[in-house]
Length: 69
Image (cartoon, rainbow, N blue to C red; front, side, top):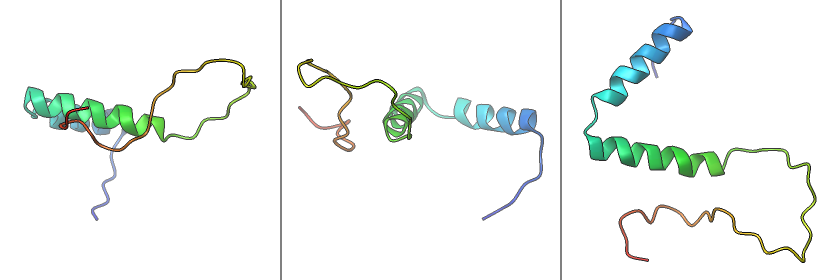
């Protein structure tokens, strides 16, 4: 593990450059990974959900990006 001391702007620029070096397909898969990881991010829910409502939400089924559904 390497520790770097840099400003926030330098860090963002480094991340941007690394992302832009990826192939378009790899960028898309990176975006999908980010979306999948956002589902796992803890959030505080303040609204109560009624059991009478029909709710459609994201399903965390793992990485099935390249398989047929």
